[in-house]
Image 1 (tube, rainbow, N blue to C red):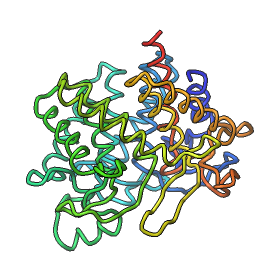
Image 2 (image 1 turned 90 degrees about the vertical axis):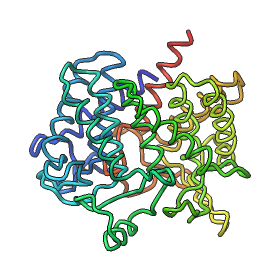
Image 3 (image 1 turned 30 degrees about the vertical axis):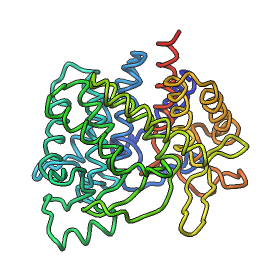
Length: 388
């Protein structure tokens, strides 16, 4: 796992650095060809910042710290909205604001990354910025009456009817995806800032999953809701199921609350078992299933397989059941057989149902980052180290 983590990071170190415009390229194809002029996303840049920061905190390689600092500097200089606070969704290739909406998903990744980076440096500024973003989300995005977080806002954070119509074109009011990443962000912030109010919000997020997102009959996650928690989708996303399983355990474990941790363990194992319905004989995990239409998306997407590696390993740690360990290993074998790009490096975005590389997709892009796969490798290596 450590070797694969280094392979992934060396790819980004070699191919993704944008020497002409600063920061990192917005897009590379599977042959590592740069798409010049491509926009740069806050999620991509925050995930790069998190990955190199976490790698430095893992093995203290100074080259990782230099790249983390490069990502931090670019995020601060180009994505930070000094007028209205928060981070922009995207900037153009030159670093000028492009899409200025404040999607909570992007704010969460900035908090997650800044919380990791502040462990690398004595500079107080990254932690202070993470706290500021957290307080901004609590002020504008948190629903104090019904719990949960709204998905997005215009640049100035005003939640008017006209603005909501624009935001809903992108996301429903409350989504499992947004909440997953707010949860991991707040948990990482709590590690460097154990604030009592933040702890309360982490508990509320965990309760949102156990009480709202987890379907009590199927134990899959329900994906999308309106503001009043009316479900808007029957879609099943196996990757979200398996990712939530270990993120919930991670968050609950920070809080020294036996009752909550015990409840989350049961929920997490149920989520892992539900996600396992998306497995195929070859060890890969399907992307999605819509029980309303019967449509199966049998593509094997890179991040889903990475989360399966870690999620099943987490299930093994909680239960001691060897079946989960064996599936974690099978997920890793699937990655080695079908997703690792032996010619050009890193992992392909995914393979089709018949195991052909999905053509024309990015190796680096808005969503293709050294985060899911880098994190799975780092977390499993760390956990094995703690077990031995």
